[in-house]
Length: 396
Image 1: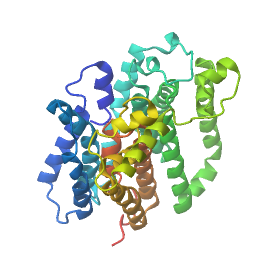
Image 2: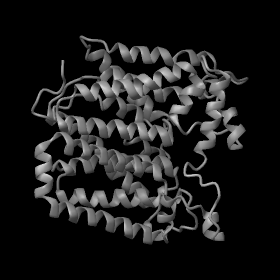
Image 3: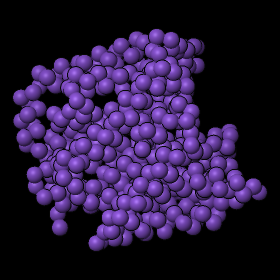
Image 4: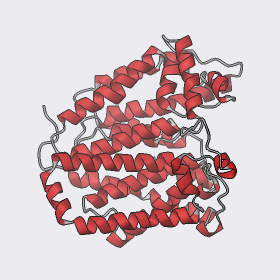
């Protein structure tokens, strides 16, 4: 469902804008009822309680607006909490875990087809370094890049473990090529950078904790080098396709700098997110205890951003709309729990997959908040014991 969400949004087949989160929550809710756990993860119940006070602070003259403001901002954190409640320390066999991820990858084929039908590579025009909705199938480039980055991370994790995610190795590499090209041409950096940072950390974890992986990497070094050159070749081709705007985008060069040739005095790599975050911090300073309520931080964004923009960074939104309760949520959910769980995992592969899925979730929340179901569901999913290692998966 989290992979298919962006497909139906692009195709215009919306049942409801937040349908991806609704369906995911329904599935998890059924799972919580059917699979009654012996031990209740009380930490996630506490996190849920931290989210509730803000429900009573949202105000608007139109009741429908109040509902929309709450739904838009509450369903994301709710999916994170319930996903964590369902998956935390849940154990499955390796084959079940791998096949589940293969199933989760299937929407990647539909996404590539939909984007290609709506905007073929040959007809794309690049005239600025701004993110390109046309290259994203006529939809929000940031969200499309996020979904493509998730699929790319998933297939690359399979490849470094020598596992096919599709029926054939050659099909895996074709999908890697298409996902990389379509993700890069959106000129939206968040999704691609989140994927490659998460992959890099996963590889570092494997190199650090798995001796056999270090030996295998040295033995397979010629193939590793060929793979790296192949990826670089795809990036080079994509940059050429964009008339070098891809390179300028990742260098942080603005369109105005390119047109005038004059370097900007105030470089802004966050493309406006910094101003929105300043608005969030202002709201937090003004209402530090319980925050301003779901969706109420938008007017504070206008002070710095110039218009009433929705939050783009989940962490600053938690501070502005939940106050000190949001800060407690951040410390527990994004610092305490991950550090504790990583320490308890004993297998290198389990640690690598945990780090990759948790990081792509957290990095997505930084650049795209929780507009998609991907970060919330992946956060909880990362805490599941996968059976990927021969050893027992958890200490204690």
